[in-house]
Image 1 (cartoon, rainbow, N blue to C red):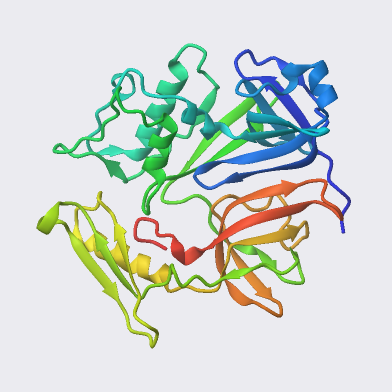
Image 2: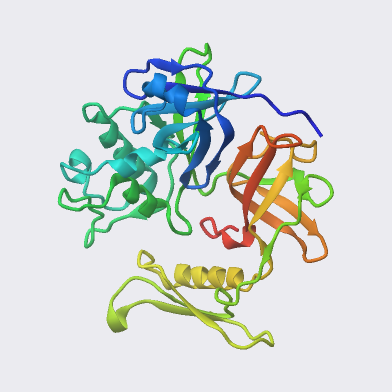
Length: 369
């Protein structure tokens, strides 16, 4: 196995940009991104170190970064939680999209940018970030991609609104915009600028998806998968019949049913897509929902070691990777989508990655799976 890969942890005042530490001694470090979420970082410090310099990890106003041995930033975010547990000072952080969770639309319609009628969801996300960062002491310096999509919100009859009296956070609004099929996706990234004098904090927007199908790497038992992953067979989620509802109320509500017979006890599930105004699209959603609900024996996580079969850093959030798992309890082969991971750079025996997977068939991208 390869030797542990050294990393460097840095902290910075989120508002002033002042560097607080350029080599923070963090142990039990774990960090990584996720699909349409902030990802996370956890680690431990010495309470004595923090007591002598409490600004090193001041929650709610401190950026934290992980830099690789080749001086590339692998992760960045905000420290949100710190607590003392015996001789350990445990800290938790989340990447840039966690910040709007702590902010609200105090002016309404994102400072006059709304209401929204047939507006690209990507543009609304950019508006939310513009509004978030234009307030005094609210600029994190996050850049949102200029990606455009055909996924719209709002109609003349029912505009998409952000009211000043609504207590939904700006982060929850973003989650609402990316939380369904055939909607944009995002992930948070962090990198040095070309001369390593500043940090580029970015929200990567993907349409119709993030990532791609990878034929150059694989996750496989006996190659790079450590231990025996658990295969989930959930009867609660299984269904051969799906009732999908769309826009409208009462008897006027759109409805489509996708059903098959396959020799198993009939199980039914309901799915709501209130934004869908056409029966053809609703029928596609129902068929997609049924297809993934008929998938049993899925693998949700694998632990990988760093090998040439899939070197760390070679895969991205959203990638589809062919996965082969064979052990006394599980026999699974198929395409799985990476929805996130955490790296343990100093794990015993060498760096490890806990990768979260979902069957690729569970995703639909504007009618393309």
